Image 1 (cartoon, one colour):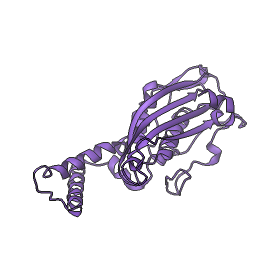
Image 2: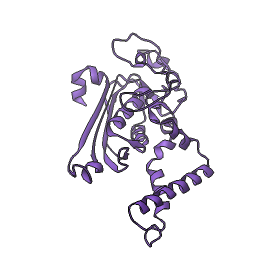
Image 3: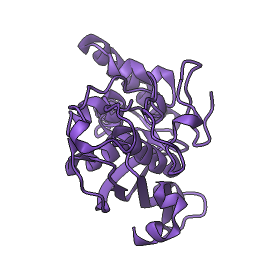
Image 4: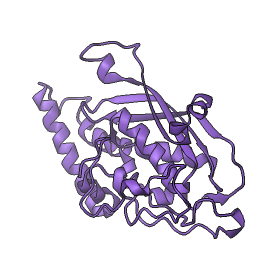
Length: 265
């Protein structure tokens, strides 16, 4: 099933619009089912508005799929054996050798002899987000707190690969949320951003996935994510504008419904 942000899930995706919290919704139990919208099932099942004293310890995150995996085939990276990874590197190196031949180069000349293997390993490293479970990234760093003001981590440096041209884009992400009895370990916000950026991406989807991951992890009152990035596909080809930057944002919950809250971010 195609989603507005360009990602795909199969028919077993059980998240619906009814799972999205808004302030007019009466207290109820939150559950996104076995597949969360950002690749993260809600780790704590509580009634919205329930007192902190009644919140039990977070249960394990169930499933790392959903928005985190635009194509089901990427799951093969998550479960790959060492032999499978060796085979993948060899196949990728062969493809790079073909690419060099297709641009008129000699892959056997000095300077290029090891390039196919180097590039194969580098590309897998740059896309290591396909091998990471968000449950492991968060690692139960979810804590019950009565803090009800904004939490912001600004200027998280990230890099990713544009899925249209396979060239890098780099930038900074700022993440803010207003807790609803639960907070995330601060470093986990940066790790969530890194996990999603280390995949083939478009900036719009990356921004939204980070926001949805935070929303589904701790069900805050609202989440705001802003990203500013420079794309080499705009700097080195096409319009060739090296100084251009792209800004994207995703506002969820009270950041979206209350303009003053959004302006304070």
